[in-house]
Length: 428
Image 1 (cartoon, rainbow, N blue to C red):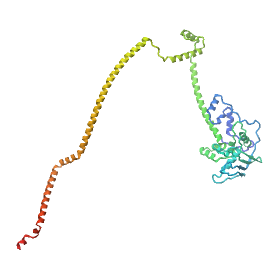
Image 2: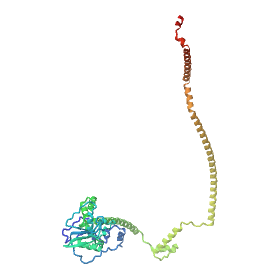
Image 3: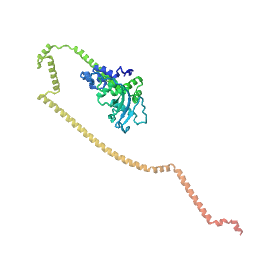
Image 4: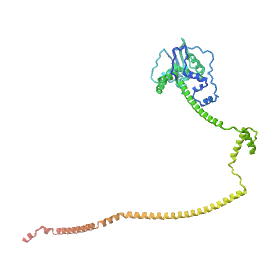
């Protein structure tokens, strides 16, 4: 998109946009559809030469109406049906050369600008894809046009929008079927901070950003459509070039084939006995030959019918083969019987082994129960001498304890005698 320039003297020059230049150039070649969304059907129709000629919007061929200059806005009348949550009643807001709108978020500052946009263009761009009835309200914009006061209301029909384009934006392009009033309004009367921010965040090229902001998202969308059609056309060109190469190769091979000898062909048909008319054109003969070959391909898969002798030989062959197969079956049955007997024997052995394993497990359980006694017995065997010495000591200890007890009893019995010494008793 080229960098846009606004003419200094708007009274003498028409305001043009890249889209108008593109349309003028493409329309000469019947490619105006490339500015719209990509359509495979439209491209194929153009390539096949069946595309319909794009008709103009149908404006009158007479000279356009005189250009009018809108200098200042005087007031905007906003009905309560526009946005009832902002405007609970009809409002008439006076406007001056410079106007400052201030207030908290959600108080309706942007709605004033949207009402002006609605009065000028009949639409609100931010509500194009939303289900909002604000665009249906009948707002009224009072403006000074060529020194007189004019009341502007939303244009609803395409013809009204095209007329307003010519009056205020000097747009004389008759090739575009859809009105461009809103696009022109946003190009020259409305600078969207949101669009500027989005463009600046996506691309570092300031000149391209300025151009896109100036001409609006519609022009950028047309450029993207052109680029996509260009890419698809490049793919088609590559495909057709490949097809041309294949056709050239085939033409070269056909040029190397020798021409048909018509006289030799008719002589061959007469001698072959085939039901072809030798005087028929070669093309007809070839078509009948192809049909005959097709029928031959269908029936050649069927086997021929054998004679009775051949069928008897085949029967004898199958009888012999049946006998051999029967013998093989008997042999296999005998082997199968032996295998079944072996399987039964193995199953019996398996049962006996399972019983033996169970008895062994029970015996092992009994041995495990005797293990503490075995350890005690082993301890006694390993320490037999020490145990005998220990038992001897216990016996001696018991004897000594018996003697001590006996002495204690004697002591108790003769305690009185033992208290008096024997010598003292003799002196008395």
